[in-house]
Amino acid sequence: MRDVLVLNRNYYPIHIIDKKKVMCLLYKEHAVALDENLNRYNFDEWTELSQMIEDSPAGYMHSVSLKVAIPEIIILTLYDKLPKGDVKFTRKNLYTHYGSKCCYCGQKFETKYLNLDHVIPRSGGGKTSWNNIVLSCYPCNSKKGSRSLKEARMRMHYKPSKPTWKPVHTMHINIGVKLRQSWKKFIDNIYWNSELEKN
Figure (spheres, helix red, strand yellow):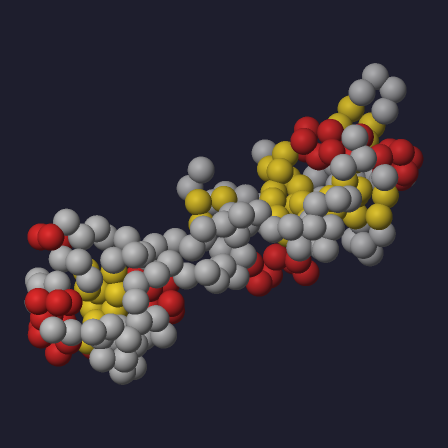
């Protein structure tokens, strides 16, 4: 079960991991535990504090001589980056990338008046990818048809490209993960903006 929220050094949430990994990170001093007041504890300090915690919401790890509470949040001591993410090739991201503008005439339209167009037609070997799909208004799409730009005697205002921006956050929240109250201040925004994964 994945019980623990992992923050990078800048307090930005990047993962949700299981308790065994957490204890390993703490023991190796790659992370410190955070309490509800954002106080930081290394492994020895957390082990000592654990002896006074009567009920740990995330449970405990037991050894022959110790009972160590599983922290609900840890912060990595060195890692300050965000996990690498990729902008998903979706209709929503295409419309955002091109600002709901027709890439041929350059005018902005409501979503319902735009469609997706293969710059190099599929019949000519064009692929459905960031580098070949653009937004097109109905008149421009009709004018171009299944021809190349040269054949249709058309020019582009916006050439096909993959966005360089990143989504709001790249951390995935798996379906079924129980969100803890202590995580709220860190993941409220990403909870509603993250892509959901089934596994």
